[in-house]
Length: 215
View 1 (tube, helix red, strand yellow):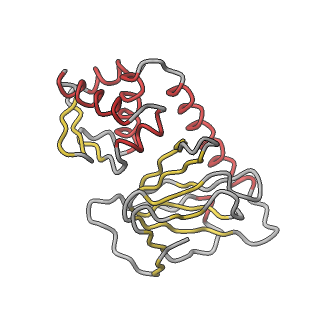
View 2 (cartoon, rainbow, N blue to C red):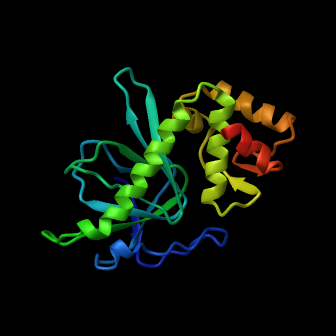
């Protein structure tokens, strides 16, 4: 794990200021760890037992398949938590997508945190089920539209949506090729549903139309 820790770190002015989940109130507060882009936060097979919260930046969680392909299971943005595991070891890799600050929460040995952690576990299960529903759709436009609606909602429902991940990341998350993802973005732009402000930022022009495509 490559990280730099600091007890005081300035968050970018545009980044949300995360609030700590209630489940972490009794956990010792740790300094923020800084991970440069593409740095590993934890690896599959490493010992689990901590929770992570994104202070700024973004994180991708993925597994490497037997044939060498990568399947991304989740993206986590500022204020969101990750790292929950049912067992004692991590079943996935976690990497910083861009320059990212992460706060690690560890619990005292023997502490019963089941009641506090249940809401986080249920939220993670719900998001995993929603991801499976997206992957079950045959239409690439439906998958990309559902992804963009989800990203917009997680960023407060603003018209301008930041996409810290690459087109390849999006493809590995949606089960599509990078070429297909790029074609769908272009098609949505040509239909006037979105505007491509740059590679990592879009504006949703017709939110209702995008939501209709995602359903």
